Length: 133
Image (cartoon, rainbow, N blue to C red):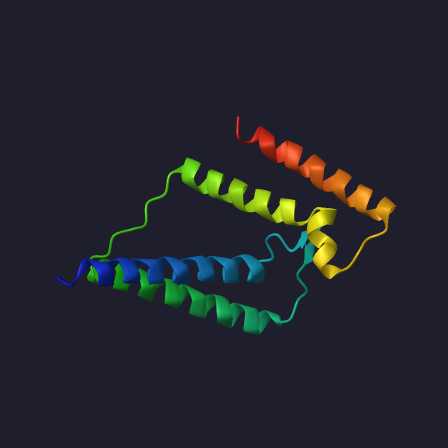
């Protein structure tokens, strides 16, 4: 099927976003990664609703795949290094903004608390720096 490459790229991104969102829904409903240090996911659906949603997700995934093939879309290709480095850069920016100096926009912290926050954030940054080697 022939249509402009800009439309083709946009629809490829749309298909990837659909796929990523369906992955997230499945992960939550299949109770993967429910508990982490910074996040808890609580149950909201009974088993019948969970099953119905997962079945609908499966149908959406099939339809998304069919659209992708029928419109002859090209997958977004990423190298591991692109993904890892982009996450590192993102984490670096988030962590730097989380130091006590960056938190001043929310008000002053007591000096002892600021020092403790900075100690933890600096430790995370030091470990993150290891990923750049």
